[in-house]
Length: 168
Length: 448
Image (cartoon, rainbow over all chains, first blue to last red; front, side):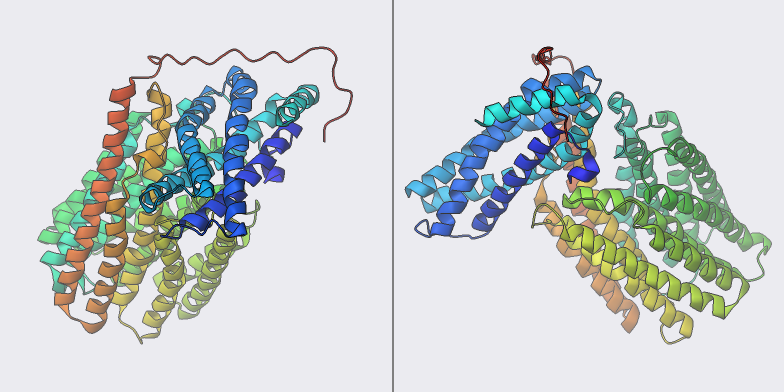
């Protein structure tokens, strides 16, 4: 999507995280399509759950914080307060869902999830997938295009370096 | 890459009551449509008029399809082309004239009352002309925006709308003045231009924006819809001209071009959806995908009617409650919460996402009832069995009532949210100042 929605180094880094989050969410959706508890002894299931938990911890928590601290204020200053309000509001709604699903993944991996927990978990996971996917699309179409307009190459390099430092 | 004006997004939204009124009227007319089928099953399964059959057709076309299209275009075009939305008063005038005119026209058809038909058609013509002026203004101002397929499609829709309006006015007056040499040919041309022209070009144009947005997919490459538009415009000109002037070769050539255009459009949409970010498409795409099958099918049915091997009623069912209504229900179920969510960003202390506004139980019911009603109505007209039209009406009314409940739920949830969190500016949250970027030292590497 990067070619259509503009290219900055910061945008490319965010785009990469979006792609990895989407891949993890796809794995989560395949798991939650099943009505019964998945077999956590299956290495593929374990890998999918680990990927989701990591994505929600890294790509959601850190990604959101990076945007809110570094990008949203710049974009609001450029006049796009509507976009910032919308994306910040979605962050606020997604965060608790992401935490709940991340904890659910850990519980599944530890073998402590019951069938009743699984039913609840599936509903929460599907809600999260719906919201996060739509949110990512809005960021790809709005945020990344806006970054290409407000960042000069030096500021872009600084922000990309800051983003890379957060990833460790 | 297009340049996105960052400031002023709030001004691109109409006052929330305007789209609510347009869509609300459409949802009520949807219920009324199926009510007419229950009350007048024999008449709605036969072409011709005036009478309840034409009343049902215009309840669907003017009441549901056109009303939704006008509300959606007045809202979506300013957002997608980054312009200030039209003033609410003009929106209200369009709605009053088209909606009020539609009610008079339908009442005139139902009661065989020519003065009401003429008055209704006249009011609808005034409303549609006003809409055409607003649309032309938006399109002229949108010339610089990067919607390579949507804008030409909407221009073509506008041209068709003007032709539909002229023919519609002449048809209504023809009941008392005998203006037209061939009323049936003019009516057929009016129907083709309205359905495939005005509505069809809007569908093709806005599909390039809405389908990728709803499927969470990359939009088709700019310009990829141009062959569809060129073929559809050629086909429609030939078919409409051929029908009006009784030139069968032109009608046949028009239908072939239209059919190829329909297939190309559907192929482009399927390719777009295939590149989506998420596998599951949800209930809306059950309807949208069904409509993609019904579009070319309706053209085939139209060709069979023209060849004299099929009665016109199945063609009408496949075209209006089939292709167009099915697509509209699929799109509208996603647009309603999306628009409501955008208004919460503008008006509430804290925004609410579109997902949180959705209650999917009535949607599931509607997704079952609408195809059932469509199937029953098709069977009723093919088998000439009015009792099946009653059953279609009951199923359709159940689906329409469900959809109305869904729409009301979206509005109620958005309103309740505003009452809960308070109006914009009342919340504790304030945007933090930008985190300063270091001035020195600058990285020396150039960015990619």
